[in-house]
Image 1 (cartoon, rainbow, N blue to C red):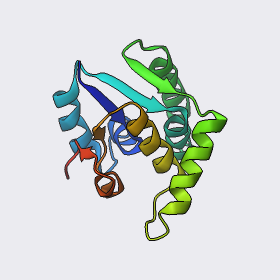
Image 2: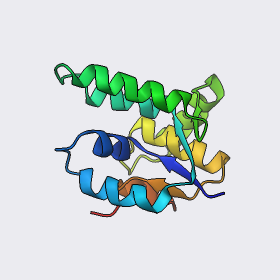
Image 3: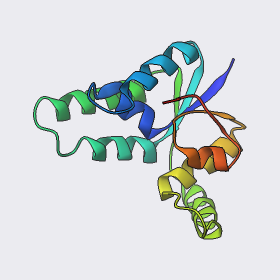
Image 4: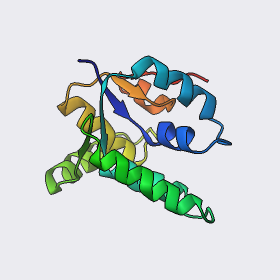
Length: 137
């Protein structure tokens, strides 16, 4: 079964109908339906933060959506261990010429460990590390 990493841009794009990535997120979802999805709790935190300034009912809707992700058997959520944090920090430090977020570094380390090449994102940072973007503008 195909394994695909789920990035923040995809989830925010799917769940926010006025987000600039909404159309590309929906298009890419059709392509990966049926795949095993992998993300991290760091991505989920970033999604919650992206919606933190939204008013009711958005906060409740997003919290419920995160709960669904956590309970879905086809979605694996990798937890941030001290080892993963340390490895991600090493990547963050080693890419001085890049503007990778720490969450991106966590995602990239997990993708390498899990041997995942495809990512539901349009963030060019993933391409710079050799991954394949599944969301196109």
